[in-house]
Length: 148
Length: 148
DNA sequence: TATTGTTATACTCTATAACTATA
DNA sequence: TATAGTTATAGAGTATAACAATA
Image 1 (cartoon, each protein chain N blue to C red):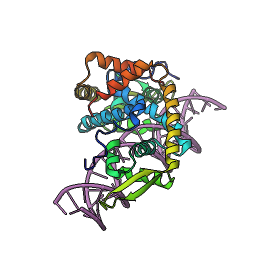
Image 2 (cartoon, helix red, strand yellow; image 1 turned 120 degrees about the vertical axis):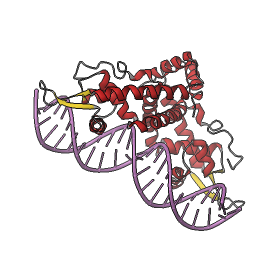
Image 3 (cartoon, rainbow over the protein chains, first blue to last red; image 1 turned 60 degrees about the horizontal axis):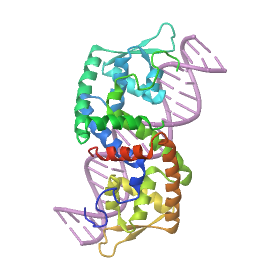
Image 4 (cartoon, rainbow over the protein chains, first blue to last red; image 1 turned 60 degrees about the vertical axis):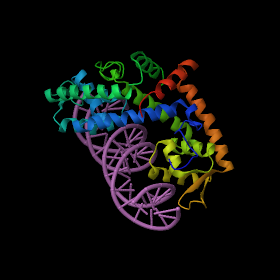
């Protein structure tokens, strides 16, 4: 750094007193690295997340998928388009309710999800290398206590 | 939710095993709420963060500000433009190095930062209401251990 | 009337390349 | 040549409104 004014990024401003600031910076760093891991597999965080839910809930409706992921239905369309275009999922109109569309993974989709999941677990091992297994569980627990 | 397929958002898919997934969702919820709090004051998260660093480091250069905030210099320009337009900071060419620009808060800028900070502390009290003071400190500590 | 999927749109954040003026 | 600030641009995430088909 060229100036002597600031030594340790963010650690000597008034920002660290805000939990949300650290939370956002951590999340940005982790998601950026996750995106780099997924990119060569043709996946983004949103498409991987959707594919994962579709694999664990074959036949899920788009509306329920969006609710599960906490995204807008309208934004789920492009995500599902991408997965369908890659032949990792299928869209199938539900006979019982012809408004709804059931989403199911293809064999290739299931395989791709498994590969990507393993890659992400490796990524997390790197990003959270300085946390013990107990600390990681504690982190997850504390995050789950945040209001959403 | 209209379908019985999914009951508890994100809690019954394979996503929760990934810390990054919970981290991103928490950060999204917290930053969205923080943005709602700041909006009526004419601030966004980026402008508030920049204003805070400028208040605690009057005379800081734009490059150092960007480094402190972990953003690209190029992206800092619009942020600083907004703060200057609102008359909360001043840009001042440094005589010793005429390439550099020193950023200083105005009286109005200092006051606005204080008001916004208090509003954000209230916002955090709501978002982290289910965490004890010790748990909040623990959360900050664990977040700081994540690789960036 | 309400819901499902969809389109269109806009805004924020982030990232990269290239320019200018200064050093 | 290297650095500080800047411009332009593009991608990704998120949010809202409105529409057609179906219930």
